[in-house]
Length: 477
Image (cartoon, rainbow, N blue to C red; front, side, top):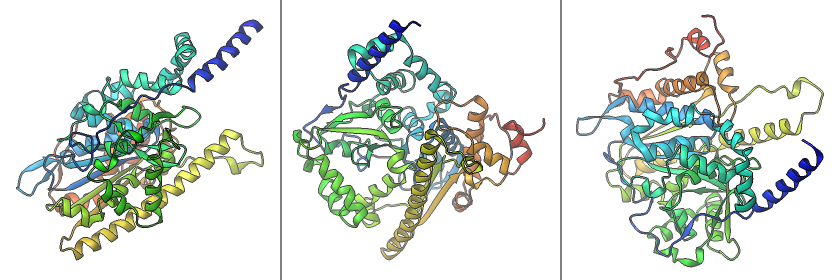
């Protein structure tokens, strides 16, 4: 390429970047809030609610997280368990809600929209696709540059278009069932405030916006928009267009959340969003920045309802068993920074710093959840409603075979893995759940059994290290 062409391309790139910064927000205004038809957790109904309260939390981690979460869904599908009336149901049908972040949001959103269809085509539509390669090819397509120059299309909007067409089929939150399936909570991060932002109508009420007309693909893109690599998803703040107190939960939530420094920070953030003059726009990026596990959203929801006392008040038939399953795809790769006196590159430094911060925050979040569970158990006992809590934590760190653990810890946080890696992750999700002691205790107490198991490309027993090593290409045979 000669010098004039290089200069022309450089000038075009500058124009493109300028245009991309003014891409219009795609959320619409509403003057009516608190309507029963909105996608609210408190108005969401799940069939057979009352047998068990089961909540799933899917962490971030690209396709690695998506595949691991998908494996857990497959295992829950194949487990049958007793109900109070003596019938048998799939454990998956007892799941009330799913909170998800980043890569985990692809799996949760797809299941929320399409139900069991996920087991038919999610692998072909997403897990086994070269998503990252496709986005890179689109980035260098002349059509993309032309549209960027004249419409402000940027990398994030390009991803939204692709996800919307190839994965989520143009669906909006109006297509999310209000009953019969879990309530799906997709989480992102407000870049300016550093606070969690959840895609539910209660959050959209604060900015007087209509979630039903909002693209699910756009929400998932926001949840997984790694800063710098992807510009933020931008929402217009219409806070002056409605009276948020019309939402019956508004005053209750603010009162309940206003206790304690941590909760007060959430209330302060909500109040800041009500000032559309000071904050006319909301910029959303990867949810992993504010909570890479998706657990704090679940805790915040309970606190907004008034803790366990408020929850029981709204649900007199509150189940005797509460199960919280954390699918944590966090990895701890081996780094060579301390093997040489050479100063690490900028990229290596940023990677190590971000991983360390996320890892420490994850530990703090898990410790907080465990403390809250003990507190809730004590409160419920005092209220005359003893409840068994089962915190089921699934992570690669529980794997004892060093080479197998190293394999999973070496998997990148990207949207592109090979078929062997995807197959192994799916099976790992199944077996990590199946072998978890807390989960086993819950199943034993309620006659839970693995009734069927679909075909798997990795047929290894949990303790058969040699088989797993062969499956991941690190053993003989």
